[in-house]
Image 1: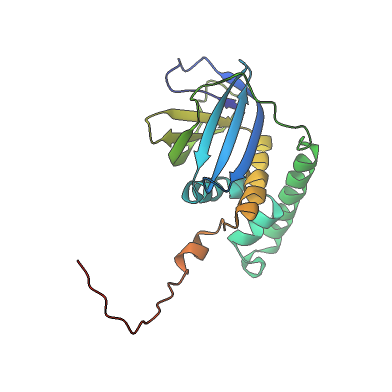
Image 2: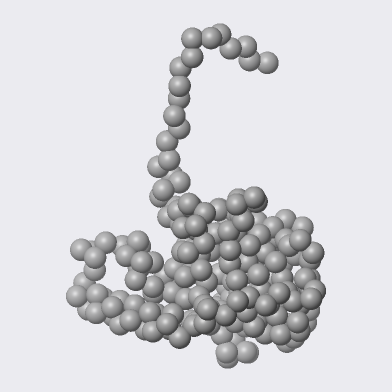
Length: 197
């Protein structure tokens, strides 16, 4: 995975060396730390809505068993599709086992934006065909006008989805869009008169 800040020329890519995703209870947000090869880092704040958007964009690409199960019931899958899905899940689990989740994140001396930037929109793009290295990119737009593009490999898609599952579990969030759509509002009655202004 590489990161390509939009203010640089398209050919100038900075490699991602480390990723870290954690929940900040004080902020009620996820903090994605991206350690770059030029010894800087980018701090990206993700709200529950943005985390859910990233999950919806990448979960099918990750082929992680939990991600695939949530997308379709196994009763609606043809036998040939089930076999293909199983092979993809096995490959995803093998990829996940090869990734290093034990090494602690090494903070860089300089953050490109002190305190981080809040991401407001994300979209999945087809990467530039001239690179021949990556097939997709995750483009993120911040509230302060910064646009970032993460070129994705299958390994980083699996890593991001795994980190999203773990971090949102810690936060008590759900990644399923249907959970938010079915949330109910509790209405309590009071005996007191209320004045509306």
